[in-house]
Image (cartoon, protein in one colour):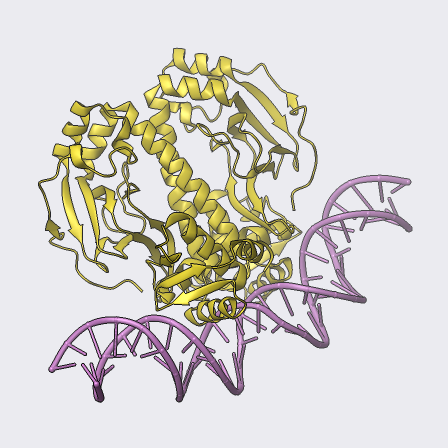
Length: 241
Length: 241
DNA sequence: CGCCGCTTTTGAGAGAGGTCAAAGCATAAG
DNA sequence: CTTATGCTTTGACCTCTCTCAAAAGCGGCG
């Protein structure tokens, strides 16, 4: 469930840094811009730091800002009137968030870890994008990829069992996150949030993970740590329970 | 389940018609092109007619073609190794299908009704799009909308009950399709396909619809016909069972 | 170092939806 | 008009996942 930690007046501006030193400049949508254009875009926006739990945008709100993720992990979520939540996306460094060219933000965006964003007023961003085809092309590429991945996830939500869901999730995390020296991955999501990604309950997530541990497929280290012991077995579980 | 009706050698070319008489020219992605550019794009592509059940693209295939839908309804689907299918999208006249700017088609595309397409080789289309910012902008807009709608559907798949799913589906059909004089909508999907859209079984779809009929919320007319008798009640069912 | 709060795990029981099987009906074919 | 075919509905039963509840464990703090 989204924590109602007010993001307004929009977190601390942690200004200063320019694109020259930006760690995501070669992966974010601004990668194809020349130095001058990138600087111009940079002047439109500003750096902002978020604490874990802070919400940047609310579902249904006017779409006033868009942003590049510089660092950290965030969730995109929607919910029903009676409070059931579904996480519809998890975004990482260099991903783009917000709804350009549209009046409404279709889902909430909340930081799962501390995070830093490169935030743009939507109107100014839209205008800049209209004048810069490379940027728009890059955004299109990214949106098409997002759509493909989102549709893949629909197969998981609609047709996979709890066991397959958890295995698929763990493999996905293993691909996206870097393990430490012991091969342990630090999950950016709580059990409840994992449940909200997979469309199951927290108890079912817990039971499946405990069972996989008992089978020696994974290892659980503290609340957030997982070691993927047998990736082959996990892949088998992800496909057919 | 996708019928394995071979689409190769790619249906009948029903050529002849130009953009001048095209019924979707003001709604498809070519709407913002000037006449000369639209003609140029038209020369890249060709008109193709499909019969219900024919598949245009297969999941995982090389992405060789993209298309505008001129007429008819098609489904986008993915499936697990063991044959469970999830319909990830239903497309209508003036929608765009296929995967531009990418090597792989991420899901199959199959005609649900007889349909007509304006089909482009992907390479040529990509090249044309790169030279025409208006087209790319329009495609971006459409892709962003698709992504928003797809993510909304994830809430349904992950968090709604069978009853809510069926009600939501019927309302969606009511919005998209025009009813005849008696208020009856002709569904373009079979019960099995509805089940594959909603991530439930055909029996559950059938039971829910029968019950809604018993309650007087809808009326069933033959195999494909539905009359939405009490839209308000249906909206209530879609939100909270 | 030990207590406290919150997340996670575990347990027991219930129920929504799935599975398997058979009967009903449209629609098409003869 | 009659029969054949396949989709849809209905029934009985089962099981996976949810619910409600309580115990356990991690991590923060005095």
